[in-house]
Image (cartoon, rainbow, N blue to C red):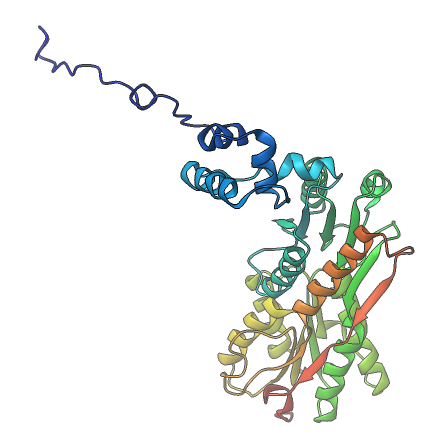
Length: 358
C-alpha cells in the first residue's frame, strides 16, 4: 500500500521480544532464568553450577538441559570477589608486535591458566607515562597481580598498590626506586661472551649498535661490549658505538657510518633483534664481508647465508619464571623481593665466525 507521497507503507511487525514472550534479548540469562526453566530453586541451580553435592541425577540433568538451552554462563566476577580475588593478572609489555615478547606472553598466560586466572595485557610502547597509565588502569580493575616490563625508571607510583596487596613482578628489566621482584637475563654476560667470540676470531675493530641508553638492557649490553674489549686490551673508539631508537633509518645510518669510516669496523655486535634485522639488510648491500653477532635470536636466522650467530635468551623461561614467582606471592609463600638472573647462550651459525676482511 502507498501513501499520497508515493512511499510504500509497510505494516508494523511485532518486535522479537513481542513475538517471543519472556525473551531477554540483550540480557544474559541468569540463574533465576535457569531455575524457572528447570522448575527448581536457585540453590539447586547454584549447586549444579558450582559442582556441589546434594542434587539428584535427574534434577541435575534438568538443570543442565536448561543451562544448555538458555546459553547460561556462570558469572565469575561476583563469586571471586567474595573470595577477595578477581582471578586475573595484568601483563604490561614494551611492544606486543615484537617477536621477543610472543613466547614470554604465552608462558605467562600458560601459568595463569594453570592457576585458573585470566591474563590481560597491554603495550607501553616504551613510554613511561603510558606504562603508568596501563598499570594503574589494571589496578583499578582489581587484578590480583602484575607482570611488568618497565618502560620508565621510577615506579614509586606503584607503592600504594603494593601496600594494598597487588602482587608484582618485573621482568626483563628491574623496577626503578622501589624494591620488587625481578626476573632478568644475564645481559652483561651475554654481550661480553658475544663480543669475546668476535675477538677470538681475529676482530679488533668491532662496532656496537644498541637501543636507547636509558633502557636497562641496552646499558647492560653496552657494558658487556666494553668489558670484552677491555679484557682483550682493545681501545674503543667513540665512532664504533651507537645507541638510540631502534628505528631502521637510525640503525641503517649508524651501520653505514661504521662501514664507511676511514678505518671501518670488521665486525658488528647488535644490541637486540630489531637492530639485527636492519644491520643484516645493510650488510647484504655491502661488498666486503663483515662479521655479525646479535643479541636475541631472530626468525629464519639459521636459513640466511651465512646463518646469524646470536646470543639467545630464553623469553619463555623469563615469562614462566616471572609468572610462577607472581603466584607464589599470591599464595603467601614469598617474603622478601628477589632478583633472578637467567643465563644466555651463544648460538654459532656462521656470521660471527667470519674472519676480518683486512
